[in-house]
Image 1: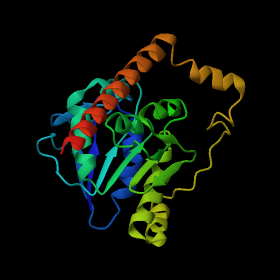
Image 2: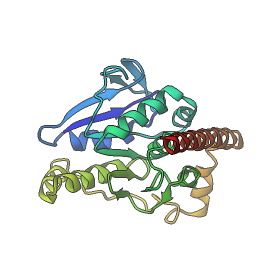
Image 3: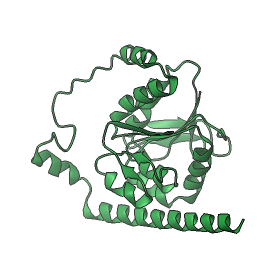
Image 4: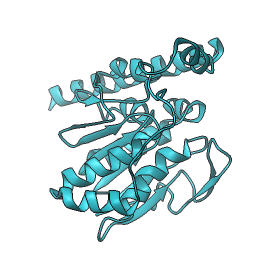
Length: 241
């Protein structure tokens, strides 16, 4: 099982660590932490992750391609042609294309989720339809060979669910769950917009000020337009053959 995990500056660390810790107990699994260049990659919580492989060194045909999410650093990727091209190429060759949180927005911008059902962080789900993605509810969503997890902490649930799905053995995933003592019992019922009080919801949504939203929307529309133009050009070439 060759698992290729794309990492980048400003990503949310737990988006990566949840699936990575889960899949690290998958018998025979091999990992690549891939970035545009090898070395230390800063995350949004101040702890850096070491990229083991550059784009040129990354497996051409991974079994699983995975993209974590984040905020400002993640949305900036939608304007990074090198990243989108790399993900499109590896995703086309991968057996599974996967993400947690806003990683699905990046995959969508690379054209890898068009026509699929997927989820994302609750703050970003509204971006998916711009790329031809059907928004689905749930901590994780599996649609054919695409799998996506919700925001941040959903990465463990997503990792266990995909492990069971691919291996066809729920017992393996259950053993991993027990080994990690994963039995969440949060101190508050405030983990979703539906559970949170109006005051808490307003405070969290306020983290994204008007400038952030404007920039995010501009990047999203630019990426969606580029994807539409790319698909139109590809269709035209196919019709000429």
